[in-house]
Amino acid sequence: MEEIRRRARSAEAKQERRHALLTAATELGLAHGVREVTLTAVTSHIGLHPSALRRYFESREELLLELAEHGWGQWCAGLLDALAEASPRTAREVAQAVAASLERLPLFCDLLTHVVLSLEGAVRLDRARRYKTAATEAYDEMTDALVATEAGLDPDGARTVLTVAMSTAAYLYQLSRPSPTLRQLYEQEPRWAHDALRFREQLAGILQTVVSGAQHTRSTPPGAWPHVDR
Image (cartoon, rainbow, N blue to C red; front, side, top):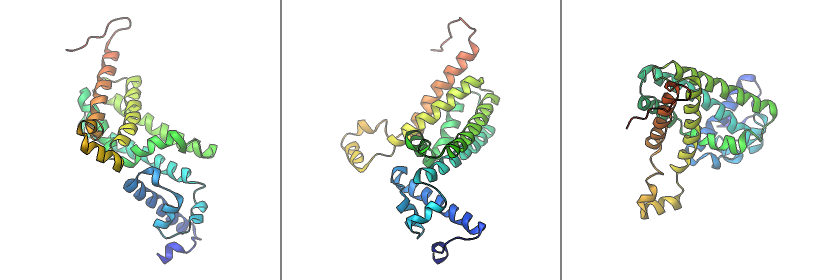
């Protein structure tokens, strides 16, 4: 702890300090949710004064945006591995692979909500650009990977699947982490918890419908009515 408290001077020490701050924010975000991650909480977690964080990140928002940027890389790597292993062909198989890749990244799912609401709009232009560049590169790589499967998705369809996946995962994640008050309410009224506590099952079900629609769109000639299996 004494080494952490001392001011980092070498490039290596500064990198270690930066990593320690990101690790602390990750641990706090997983334990209590992103909204509870404050500068004071992060620095206290590793025994530093809050002012120390300003040497590495200009704000809480920049720190959390860094974690979100890292999350895009994790999602991309995880989804590509899942697609390569599963070799999905059906809408259900694609949906399960995408849902599983997001379920493994709870902090990223939480951050997706906050990125849109506050994080990317509260940092300098060059930092926002760096985040957008990393996110876009990951998004494009995942799009190509979905198109390369034998599931019959074209680029537009693959992009639709990913966009629905990230937006739905962000919403469902918040539902799946109810406050103590809501947990008590759900215990009293279990029917209200039916949709709130089934993150992967709900996400996979929604994505299966989206993938199926994208498959039909690709296979339907312009001006023709799509065939719907009953």
